[in-house]
Length: 236
Image 1 (cartoon, helix red, strand yellow):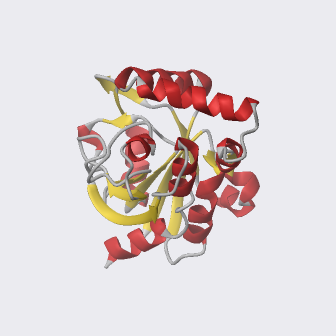
Image 2: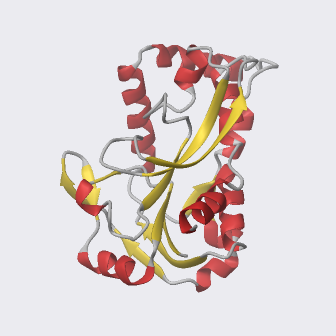
């Protein structure tokens, strides 16, 4: 299967590297890498935090708990571990051979209601070179008119079981609702946020997690072979 990767500014988070490495070593071909040009990542991060707080004000106390644990170096704090696996890694520095792949730089087109699409040149490239698209670090909502631009759709990860929890912040509702299990979902996205067709899932017992950070860390570190297994399943 020919795979197109859409990556924000050419960087991924450290915990996603194993998924990319396994994809490189699989029978699937990375036919194109689409790099969204860098804009204001810091503002996006702040916006995400503010939206999370507005949607559930308890998230504000989670942020306070993180800072408190960091300042006083609480023994059970997972914040430093979480920051480590969330480091931004340049994929071309980590995997130099990817520089030999076809690369296309683009800017997302705002279509309507904070939903985005791609220009004609990028659509033509995808149509001629990609059986499926994988989103890595690309967090914009894709407009419904662009969801079927490949034979097998657009795939993305969601750090949760989308049967129960959708949207942001990942891991938060599992923690405050005392769930026994948390997980990661690989989905083929559709027009409803985090309600896509489930391709592959992993779960982990989070019953003994003592903080939101530990819960999120446990869920994020599940990423390993989800992507390749999911693509194999789609191909079959």
